[in-house]
Image: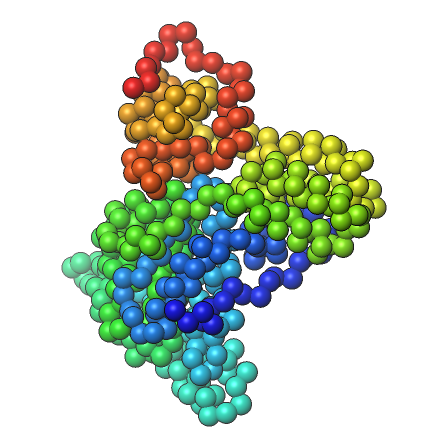
Length: 436
């Protein structure tokens, strides 16, 4: 592989300290200003775009999945920025952000591709002063003409796009292959990387299957690559939607950062905001905060914000005199996060305590029968389908399927397991279940 292609993008500029301390979500301001680690995950993306650059088209779909807070959106933003920074007038690349609900319409997807190509053509035209400019303006004219043609055919309805109306058939969805084929003469001169966040919400429809087939294996050799980012069951959802054979090396589970990566994030925060203090005291803070976070990206951010607020209260100086105050505040932020997870869950909190206790007796893993056996009482009593419990638990971040042991599930955040064990909640006396 040519290592010079698609290096990690230049770091995002840290946002002003007072704004960073007010943040309530890691992804609310675009790129994560202190993105670190994930080199092995980023290499999956790097290998895929390098392969596309070398002319290999089709079958390169990437799937990045994990529990809430695992860093999916942060990684996606880095990959999108790498595409933008790599694009040149001589060899234009385009990052296209598409919402999962749009994937049911081939026209909507193609229109978004055309619009993204047009925007990049305009941007590159402003940068280029040679003959490439004329070529890019030609692409722009073609793109606008094609977009106008599709719109005039009545393909845009309520923000989505559908096939032309027929008196007898009403609104029908046109063949996805034909729609992509009609746009190929414009798209073939650009390298396109399509990014779909929250991909676990991709609608399971026949039209979606046609669109995903075109993204996975683009017709007419359109140089296109798709990257899906979603919760732990994203691969299963995309399989339902027609991507039945993603390359095994391109399905990535996002879990913990390692200890050194975690320390590096915290050090970079202290450095970016110019906190003072001896190197010895700073390193002690880094180590204690890294241990408390256990490498979970959501925790790293929450803990770093809590600690930084304490540092700011003491004039921006890091001293061991107030380390315990910072750790106490950081623990509170972690427990706020756990309470938020449980509020998202269906069922009473004792169910999740029983899950972790059962997992403790099975090397940390649970199979579907064990999970549903524990959940059955509360779900049937409330009139809700027991089978939906697993999906709810995956989407809330309580459980995650093991990549090494398909069909088995674990609780991905180590300290969340500790929190669940300490819950005072207990099942009702008439609740009967066995761990099998």
